[in-house]
Structures are given as structure tokens and as C-alpha cells.
Image 1 (cartoon, rainbow, N blue to C red):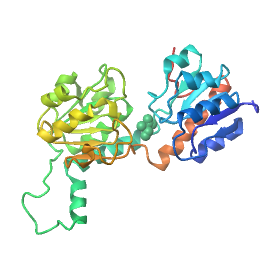
Image 2 (tube, protein in one colour):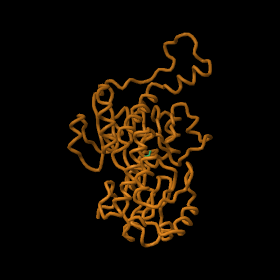
Image 3 (cartoon, rainbow, N blue to C red):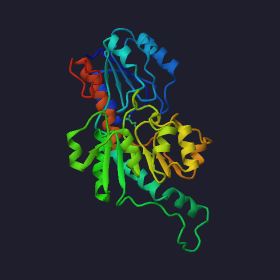
Amino acid sequence: MADCKVYVTRRIPKPGTELLSKHFEIDSYDSDEAIPHQVLVEAMKKKRYDALYCMLTDTIDSEVLEAAGSQLKIVATMSVGYEHIDLHECATRNILVANTPGVSTDSVAELTVALLLLTSRRIAEGVEAVRNGEWGDWKPHWLCGTELTGSTLGIYGLGRIGFNVGRRLKPFGFSKIYYTDVHEVSYAKDIDAEFTDFEGLIKNCDFICVCCNLTPQTRHMFNAETFKKMKNNAILVNTGRGGVIQHDDLLEALKNGDIAAAGLDVTEPEPLDKDHPLVHQKNCVILPHMGSNTWDSRNAMAEIAARNCVAAITNQTPEGNVLTS
Ligand code: DGY
């Protein structure tokens, strides 16, 4: 086992390196920035690695896997999302794929609530107004937002994160919580959430939190047609994946009043250019994909991805096993 080798595509939090160093010889891309694709391909050719420890910014495609060689046992991503990994190629080559489910649930759920309040109460505009010296005498109509209390909440994707968003938001006193997912889930009753189809969700909800993965089924589900069917007062919050929303259509919907506001922690593309019109749209708040940016989450993510690498070389099933068959 001492001969096992891992390639790590970034500087990672200490708990990850500490665990890896007990089981592997480690090579890594010694930077806080993402490794360029060709640099990764070349790195994979240099040694015969048993494990590839990657981030959600690394495209793990056939070129990387071919360069890595047939001894590669696992692609372990330090993320919940795994849409950057070609699962079909990994399965064909008998390579395990593992993510870090669960550990960022609380951090992402907390940020979703923050983004919902930030958007509904126009907090970013308020902060900006104070900074710009626009805070004058008290005015009855200035910077008024919408209360969550008594309104309808929709959760698109009631997985771990969606459920924990609902759990945190329930005490705000929504009149109704709806959710849409591929199928009904029994734990929805714990937050009194009612299953509905996508049409029901977009037509009935004042606030919609997108908490799903990006799949062919969820891609661009929020588009011009969807925005036309949503309530004009609706606020859309996305902490799932940017690709669930068609961003040109969102911009139009925000400009022409099809919906009231949006709060985005994830966008398409990422990063979003500072000159992108959505960045300057007043009723849109954009954060730089920081849902899991807490020390607790990042340390745990680093350690679990490392544990997954260790599992692969000790013939155990990684805890975030993505390819189940
Ligand atoms: C994940 O783990 O997939 C998150 O999006 C990272 O913040």
C-alpha cells in the first residue's frame, strides 16, 4: 500500500492531506487556482496513479482517464456535484467515482436561507444605499420588500439540501410549502411539504428555491416559458446548479417584471463576468458559488474525499459511491 500514488488537483484543507499522506505518495498541483486541463492530462501521464483527487472545476473526461492509465482505481471529487466527471467513461474503464455527500448540507442550506432573505428584503440594495450616501429621511416606500410569512414556498429538489432548506424556513410561517422532485419522498411530511408537479410549483409559489442537481431533466427548466407562468411577485433562489436556469431568459424576466427578483449562488457560466448584465440588474443578487464555504464543510469535504481514495485502494466501497452498478 505504501507504493500507492494519488494525484491531487489543488491545495486542499489539512485533514485531506493528513489522511492521504498515511496511505499514498502524493503529487499535487500546488495552487489555489484550478489546474488547466492540459496540465492535468500531462501530469496524469507522468506516474501511474491509483487515485485522482479532483475538484468540481476539473473536467475529468476520456483524455484525462486515458492519460491516467488502466491502474487508476478512483476519481474522488471534493464536491457534492459530479457533473464534471464523465461517468460513462469511468464505468467503462472500471474506475470508481465518489463524491462528498452530506457534509455541506448545513452550510448550503444556511446560505440558501440567507440568499432568500437577502433578496426578499432587498438587503444588498440597502447596504449599497448606505455606502453611496443615499440614506436620507425615513420614507414610506423606500426599499420595501416582501415578507416570507403567509406566502407560499416551493422547493425544486427535496434531497438532503432541499429538505434542510425547508426545515430551516418552516418556522417563518409560510402558508404552504410545495416541492417537486422525480418522485414523492416520505420525509416531506416532517416539514409539511406537499408534492406537486413542476407546473404546480411555478404557478403557485411566491418563493422558489432551486436545490437540485444538474441533470438532462433539470437543465434550463427555468426558461422564458417558465418565467411567463410564474407569479409576477415570485422570487427565485438558486443554490443548486447554474445550468438549471437559462440566464438570458432570466435577465429578460427580471427586466420585464415576469418575476420580481432572483438570488443566485450558482450561475452559468461560472465565474460570471463582472460586466454580465445580470450582475448589474438591481433585482438580482449574485454570490460567487459560496454555499459550502465554511471551515467545517471544507475540512470535512477534504477528509471524505481522502477517505474515498483510501477506500478504493483497500477494496472497500467509498462512502460517496456515485456509480452504484
Ligand atoms: C459541491 O460540493 O458540489 C458544491 O457546489 C461546492 O460548493
